[in-house]
Length: 427
Image 1 (cartoon, one colour):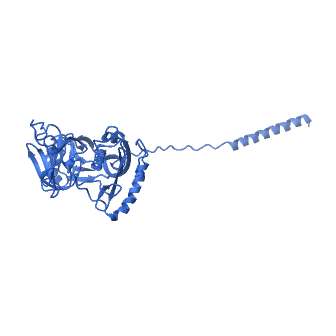
Image 2: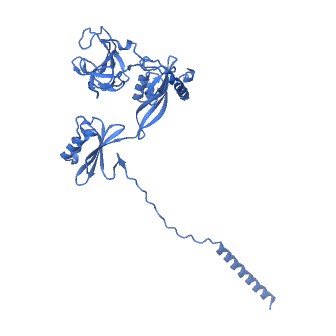
């Protein structure tokens, strides 16, 4: 065979062989096709909404506030509630919370079915921040009281007096209730109307919370008030008979009577045997202390005692009189309205007995506070009043341990104080 022909044949065979090998190699390297995946879309699960334990998916909702002179029947009548059901709820609600005791400006919620008729199903009333009352108007008529869970959170605060205690506490995010608590705590150590610019304070206190919202102040745990470079300490301590407040030596900070029977008010007129009366236009003894405050500011019992009078006179307007013991009696004049305590009932120091007004012979809203000692009216602000008992010796060791811990916490509060050298640890 021709050598040239043989060479051509060999070259062709080699070329074909190489091509087949290359093709097979590529085929082996080729990735297999992925199987098509079925796309599954998960539907979002929507949780049903509830308010006061009642489904908002099932009922329509109307919210509002009780208006002056508005009744339960006024609210539910437009929602096709029959008179017999209203009478029944009125009767059975006495055992829980009477529908006759709805207070103006308190919140309510009405749940109704929107069928052919708008028919009320539930009426929910909130008498305060910690509870609500459910009046069930469908199926079996019923009334239930529910308590909300209250959580206590400890907070700290520091502030500097530039204008007043009220301004300083509010500037730091505090409430009127906290101002009142501090005024009560230091009422007999400091004149809250005589504070100086540059005075400062630190405190540890409790905030009461419901559903993440503040509903008021609990107890003050510890405080330091620096007035004209003098520190006044206050420590909460329970010796087994209840919480009280003491200074660093274990002496009680509290007197038998509150200095301010009206929440953080100002003294507008003092005891004066020869005062010119602004209404009668003649000199007449003023045998009390006037605390100016806004209408309906709560009036507190100055001390523990028995309500011996509650009524009206032309001069006093609405008034309450409390007998505390064989020595002391107090009177509260010109009230706009009374609290819940009736004649013959016992009341504790700090409980609300009425609200500021200007009934009787009064030109402006204030409380005229009267103070009797052995039957004679005296100047309350000049009386040497009895203090609460100091800590008994058997409690001092535990008190000192707790006091040191509170001092450390007070010192750790980052301050608004103008000079950080003044602190609990230096006392």
